[in-house]
Amino acid sequence: MQDAYHPKAVEAAWQDWWEASGFYTCDPKEAEGKSDDEKFVMIIPPPNVTGSLHLGHALTAAVEDTLTRWHRMQGHATLYVPGTDHAGIATQSVVEKMLMKDHNLSRHDLGREKFVEKVWEWKQEYGDRITNQLRSLGSSVDWSRERFTMDDMCSKSVVEAFNQFHEKGFLYRDLRLGNWSCALKSAISDIEVDYIELDGRTFLPVKTHKGNPNDKDGRYEFGTMTSFAYPIENSDEVLVVATTRLETMLGDTAVAVHPEDPRYKHLHGKMLIHPINGRRIPIIQDSVLVDMNLGTGAVKITPAHDPNDYACGKRHNLEFITMLSPDG
Image 1 (tube, rainbow, N blue to C red):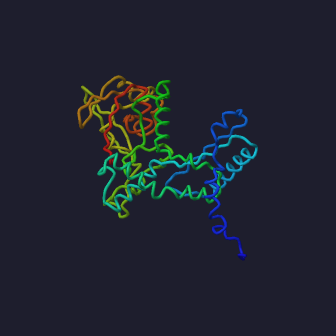
Image 2 (image 1 turned 45 degrees about the vertical axis):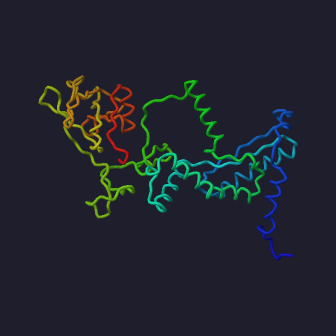
């Protein structure tokens, strides 16, 4: 007898036998004869295929498996469905790094279809780590129904859901402000964006840029208030605005002032001339966005590049001009 318990030696063959014996499957015909109270179906929250299971996953899997086995012991029609999530941006990033390292190619060099093929190749080679961990845990999932969120069945379900949402008016096409990653060349969700509040002039590194040659640490300057003047149409007067994003002036479609600011009441309804491209820009009144005590009290509005300006642009039906390239 072994002097200690060696799980690999003892448990190695059990999982294969359990799966081969069909202990964790659920017969649809048997389920048809059951009442709703005698049916239990649970889908595992799909972990990202790029990662591996940690202690939190182990705890969740233990609780879910306990519930599943309890229902199965009650004689209920029980189904516990395994699967993994394609992890969108994370998988894309991993595969892109592999392509660049091994072949000196980007996903744009390959094209969409060829890149998706590479993602599938990567998934087939490296994506079994999580499923092997679940097997090691002894989770009583039905492996014959294993799903991957990019497989044909899931993809068809997504298309069907989107079609239903569209037909019901929940889903529609529109121009909206989103988050763009210059490194990934892709839109990303709000949850993947870290916001930093700056109190003033601040130097920060930008990982996707080579570095600022004018700073010994290669950092870039942020949070510096810069003022410039917009000429007022048919007048020698100018309207000075203050901004920390001077480069976005090419996308300005209005300048906002507070309706109660006495300094600018004589300018209500007048137009400005863009000093670079000559576009006519309206002076609008907006009490939501403008703080009379901040800067000059006049705010340049770039609806396509700032969340607050976007909301202002919607309120005043302004033009939305994209002036940044995909690489920022």
